[in-house]
Length: 352
Image (cartoon, rainbow, N blue to C red):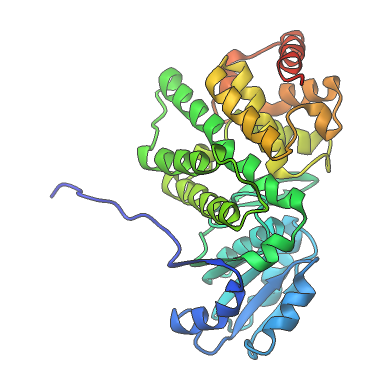
């Protein structure tokens, strides 16, 4: 019999709204995830202490564990500590670092994971990828997607504005990643998954043309939905391909060469704008530039404290961060001098 459909992995529940975290106990019980509330709750720094205090009255059987690092070693140590206990699930509460550690641990100990996001800095909320540090470098690890996602807008709106707008940069970079995927299909006959591409493109287009900002609850809700949709596009594709192209290769290179330069979303947006320039893609370059400008996101390496020479070095290193990925960077295969020329041209085009 012909295959008529395919199964797509997705969270069983998505709740975005003010005070959403108060529904965690009900979700665990009514969703059949943990009727007794015997869960390991991983909380990050920042708002973690406050969240732990708020939840202790409703999750009496839970154990709260602090996430202090986004390293693979720390994640493995926590997994080894939690493994002997009879938990029903892992709950990650916090930003991208905490959620990535929680997703990795849940996969290692073979437990369902619930993601509770308190900021919207990048698209890892519902993705099958955990970005963790190993030997001073960030790596991407395949993990199970969360069985449920909660985005509490009360906590999100209290997070630093910079962490809010960073998610905008990450989601609009999908347009660059999709252009690279199409290029790989044309040049190397790489298969593009149309469903994954549709999810990723819809996520980017839901955000890029809006004229409101992160001060608007409506905008934050759409941004949260777009980030979840980006994660689902990766789950459908079985890789980060629909949301990660030359733009992310550049950000990973910056992270390697100049750790702490900026956050993930800011660098993704900057990388996407530069890659659009390399493609001579005026339509996407204008749309991305307008969006980044509207939200006060970096549009130039100088905006994140990098010199021209440093950015050139990052672009030169970028292809080696994802050796199996074909993007505009691999396609052009620019020499050091050619990269310098392109960076100078790029800077000239985005001058106020």
